[in-house]
Amino acid sequence: MSFHMHLRATATNEVPEDFSSLVDLMSTAWEAHQKEYAAGVAHSIDKDFSHVHELYIMGLDHSDGTNPANNLPIFGGRHIDGPAKDQPPFVILDPAEVHRTADFLQTLSFDERWRIAGTNLSTPYIGWEDENAARKIYLGHHDALRTFYQRAARAGDAVIKAFWY
Image (cartoon, rainbow, N blue to C red; front, side, top):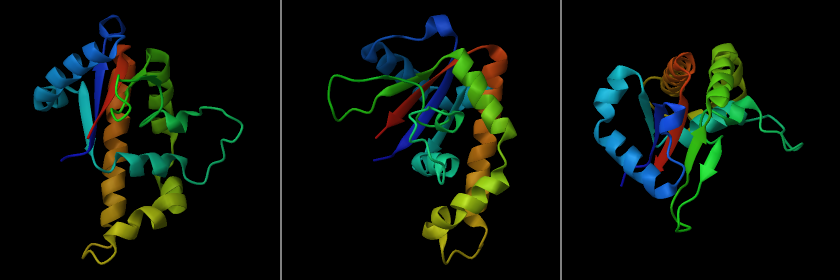
Protein backbone atom coordinates (compact mmCIF):
# COMPACT_ATOMS: atom_id res chain seq x y z
CA MET A 1 0.00 0.00 0.00
CA SER A 2 1.27 3.43 -0.90
CA PHE A 3 0.98 6.57 1.20
CA HIS A 4 0.98 9.82 -0.69
CA MET A 5 -0.33 13.34 -0.75
CA HIS A 6 -1.82 14.45 -4.06
CA LEU A 7 -2.27 18.16 -4.74
CA ARG A 8 -4.31 19.55 -7.61
CA ALA A 9 -4.83 23.16 -8.63
CA THR A 10 -8.45 23.72 -9.59
CA ALA A 11 -10.55 26.73 -10.57
CA THR A 12 -12.51 27.81 -7.51
CA ASN A 13 -15.88 27.29 -9.21
CA GLU A 14 -14.91 23.67 -10.00
CA VAL A 15 -14.06 22.64 -6.42
CA PRO A 16 -16.64 20.14 -5.15
CA GLU A 17 -18.04 20.79 -1.70
CA ASP A 18 -18.91 17.21 -0.75
CA PHE A 19 -16.71 14.22 0.03
CA SER A 20 -18.14 11.90 -2.62
CA SER A 21 -17.62 14.40 -5.43
CA LEU A 22 -14.08 15.07 -4.19
CA VAL A 23 -13.36 11.32 -4.31
CA ASP A 24 -14.57 11.22 -7.92
CA LEU A 25 -12.63 14.32 -8.98
CA MET A 26 -9.37 13.40 -7.27
CA SER A 27 -9.52 9.73 -8.32
CA THR A 28 -9.91 10.78 -11.95
CA ALA A 29 -7.14 13.34 -11.50
CA TRP A 30 -4.87 10.67 -10.01
CA GLU A 31 -5.36 8.49 -13.08
CA ALA A 32 -4.18 11.46 -15.19
CA HIS A 33 -1.51 12.49 -12.70
CA GLN A 34 1.48 12.27 -15.05
CA LYS A 35 -0.24 14.44 -17.64
CA GLU A 36 -1.46 16.93 -15.01
CA TYR A 37 1.98 16.97 -13.35
CA ALA A 38 3.57 17.82 -16.70
CA ALA A 39 0.99 20.61 -17.15
CA GLY A 40 1.89 22.03 -13.70
CA VAL A 41 -1.58 21.57 -12.18
CA ALA A 42 -0.75 18.56 -10.00
CA HIS A 43 1.95 17.47 -7.61
CA SER A 44 2.41 14.59 -5.21
CA ILE A 45 4.71 13.53 -2.41
CA ASP A 46 5.08 9.85 -1.57
CA LYS A 47 5.33 8.89 2.11
CA ASP A 48 7.50 11.90 3.14
CA PHE A 49 4.71 14.48 3.22
CA SER A 50 4.31 14.46 7.02
CA HIS A 51 8.06 14.93 7.40
CA VAL A 52 7.97 17.86 4.97
CA HIS A 53 5.31 19.34 7.26
CA GLU A 54 7.74 18.87 10.17
CA LEU A 55 10.39 20.74 8.21
CA TYR A 56 8.06 23.74 8.06
CA ILE A 57 6.78 23.67 11.66
CA MET A 58 9.50 22.12 13.84
CA GLY A 59 10.68 24.43 16.60
CA LEU A 60 7.85 26.90 16.21
CA ASP A 61 5.31 27.61 18.95
CA HIS A 62 1.70 28.11 17.87
CA SER A 63 0.06 27.64 21.23
CA ASP A 64 -1.83 30.87 20.63
CA GLY A 65 -4.11 28.97 18.24
CA THR A 66 -3.01 30.80 15.10
CA ASN A 67 -2.85 29.01 11.78
CA PRO A 68 0.31 30.49 10.34
CA ALA A 69 1.40 30.05 6.75
CA ASN A 70 3.88 27.30 7.66
CA ASN A 71 0.91 24.96 8.28
CA LEU A 72 -0.62 25.58 4.85
CA PRO A 73 1.62 23.68 2.38
CA ILE A 74 0.80 20.18 3.65
CA PHE A 75 -2.06 19.87 6.14
CA GLY A 76 -3.52 23.38 6.31
CA GLY A 77 -6.82 24.41 4.80
CA ARG A 78 -10.49 23.57 5.10
CA HIS A 79 -11.10 19.88 5.81
CA ILE A 80 -13.91 17.93 4.15
CA ASP A 81 -14.38 14.79 6.23
CA GLY A 82 -15.55 11.47 4.86
CA PRO A 83 -18.39 9.37 6.22
CA ALA A 84 -16.01 6.85 7.85
CA LYS A 85 -13.63 7.85 10.64
CA ASP A 86 -10.73 5.95 9.08
CA GLN A 87 -10.89 7.95 5.81
CA PRO A 88 -8.47 10.86 5.57
CA PRO A 89 -10.17 14.16 4.81
CA PHE A 90 -9.73 16.16 1.67
CA VAL A 91 -8.21 19.57 2.34
CA ILE A 92 -8.98 22.67 0.31
CA LEU A 93 -7.05 25.92 0.14
CA ASP A 94 -8.93 28.86 -1.33
CA PRO A 95 -7.05 31.21 -3.70
CA ALA A 96 -6.09 33.61 -0.88
CA GLU A 97 -4.59 30.71 1.10
CA VAL A 98 -2.80 29.49 -2.03
CA HIS A 99 -1.25 32.98 -2.35
CA ARG A 100 -0.21 32.93 1.34
CA THR A 101 1.32 29.49 0.84
CA ALA A 102 3.19 30.57 -2.31
CA ASP A 103 4.49 33.69 -0.54
CA PHE A 104 5.56 31.63 2.48
CA LEU A 105 7.43 29.09 0.36
CA GLN A 106 9.05 31.84 -1.73
CA THR A 107 10.41 33.74 1.28
CA LEU A 108 11.27 30.76 3.48
CA SER A 109 14.95 30.15 4.09
CA PHE A 110 15.34 26.43 3.44
CA ASP A 111 18.82 26.50 4.98
CA GLU A 112 17.47 28.02 8.20
CA ARG A 113 14.66 25.47 8.43
CA TRP A 114 17.15 22.67 7.70
CA ARG A 115 19.39 23.86 10.56
CA ILE A 116 16.39 23.53 12.88
CA ALA A 117 14.83 20.29 11.58
CA GLY A 118 17.56 18.58 9.56
CA THR A 119 19.01 16.43 12.33
CA ASN A 120 15.64 14.86 13.12
CA LEU A 121 14.67 14.48 9.46
CA SER A 122 18.04 12.94 8.54
CA THR A 123 17.85 10.07 11.03
CA PRO A 124 16.35 7.52 8.58
CA TYR A 125 19.17 8.30 6.12
CA ILE A 126 22.08 7.62 8.47
CA GLY A 127 24.49 5.24 6.82
CA TRP A 128 23.61 6.21 3.27
CA GLU A 129 26.64 6.68 1.06
CA ASP A 130 25.62 10.26 0.29
CA GLU A 131 25.65 12.05 3.64
CA ASN A 132 23.60 14.89 2.12
CA ALA A 133 20.89 12.58 0.77
CA ALA A 134 18.22 13.71 3.24
CA ARG A 135 18.89 17.39 2.64
CA LYS A 136 18.70 16.88 -1.14
CA ILE A 137 15.40 14.99 -0.82
CA TYR A 138 13.77 17.66 1.34
CA LEU A 139 15.14 20.50 -0.76
CA GLY A 140 13.63 18.77 -3.80
CA HIS A 141 10.24 18.54 -2.07
CA HIS A 142 10.46 22.18 -1.02
CA ASP A 143 11.43 23.42 -4.50
CA ALA A 144 8.66 21.38 -6.15
CA LEU A 145 6.02 22.64 -3.68
CA ARG A 146 7.19 26.22 -4.17
CA THR A 147 6.89 25.89 -7.96
CA PHE A 148 3.48 24.20 -7.75
CA TYR A 149 1.97 26.78 -5.37
CA GLN A 150 3.41 29.70 -7.36
CA ARG A 151 1.76 28.42 -10.55
CA ALA A 152 -1.55 27.90 -8.74
CA ALA A 153 -1.37 31.39 -7.18
CA ARG A 154 -0.63 33.04 -10.54
CA ALA A 155 -3.64 31.24 -12.05
CA GLY A 156 -5.89 32.27 -9.14
CA ASP A 157 -6.69 28.62 -8.42
CA ALA A 158 -7.73 26.80 -5.30
CA VAL A 159 -5.74 23.69 -4.30
CA ILE A 160 -7.30 20.38 -3.35
CA LYS A 161 -5.22 17.95 -1.30
CA ALA A 162 -5.97 14.24 -1.15
CA PHE A 163 -4.18 11.88 1.20
CA TRP A 164 -4.22 8.37 -0.21
CA TYR A 165 -3.48 5.47 2.17
